[in-house]
Image (cartoon, rainbow, N blue to C red; front, side):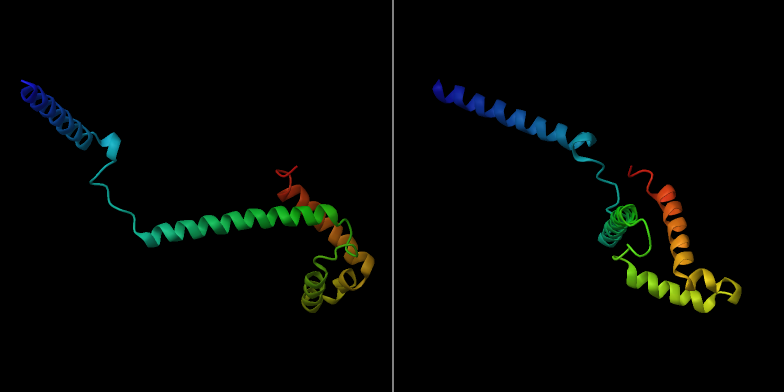
Amino acid sequence: MNTKLLLSIRLIFALLLCSGATYAASNASLWGDIDAPVVPTKVIEQQQQQLQAEQLAIQNQKTICELFSAQATLPNDTAGATTIQDALARAYKVTLPDYRVLIANKDAANSLYMQYRNVYLKTYCTAAK
């Protein structure tokens, strides 16, 4: 009699397992859509690279905003001094002679820098404040 009881318990347990597996296999919310196409790994890698590039751009924008906030005038901008000097030299070469004084004169260049800084801070750095 003990064997019959044990056998019936095992049979009920096996039936419960089979019915649970059948339910799980038929229910799409548990497993997702089996027929859905698998996204290629190259597409996933491209999406991740694009996301990383966007995050880096956001981080760089914050850095530029922080630098501009700290550097109110051109002589104080020690972080970007070489880049600014190179850009001014290139701009001097392509600028019309009437406007070269704005680049060559330190006060005029400082005024241009402060105007650009203010426009940049108002345009791109308002979300950071």
